[in-house]
Length: 207
Ligand code: FDM
Ligand code: MG
Image (cartoon, rainbow, N blue to C red; front, side):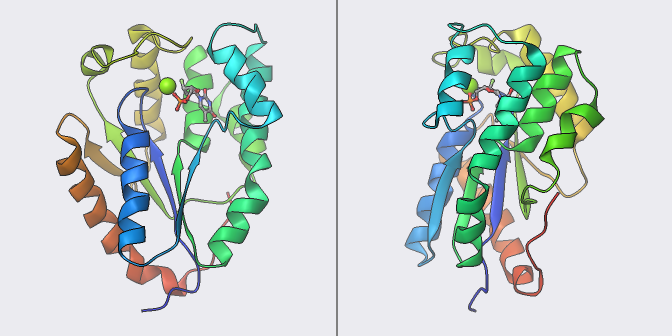
């Protein structure tokens, strides 16, 4: 079955839940199945805006909460053309964090509401599939490197999880992340395999 376009798959979830690992494994799975696929990560720390975000996350640069929120969104807009072109040429785009992270983390700070946070996301590519890796915050605390960046406190991560629960839409795929990497990967493959045949009829959508 030839796909006219690629699929935009978004991974969401708390810090250290295993999103990057699973997203990269999914890219490899597509490639071994003969499909072009690319990994995209937000924040993309390699751009000038991404470099500012990186300094903020490492605690090296103070920033107004509303400003950092807008930089995260601007960082997604920087990748719009590239992602759009890849999808239209038939490539799968597997994204580690997207607009939901933008909203969940800023709403958790209590400084802005959903509408404000979501505003500048309007017009970005809408995901075809959202995979939410779900875990107890206690499990994440014990994972290597937890605590190295400014949002990595169990208190903040708990409130992020609460906001994610409120943002959750019926079409999200919730995957239990407290299992071994292979088991999780197999569940994700099942989700994706289910969605692939429907894609042919659907056009790319925007938020
Ligand atoms: N984060 C990430 C946000 O606050 N807003 C966003 O829009 C995005 C994409 O940045 F704590 C937060 C989430 C996380 C931090 O992300 C760095 P990674 O995935 O841990 O690199
Ligand atoms: Mg992190």
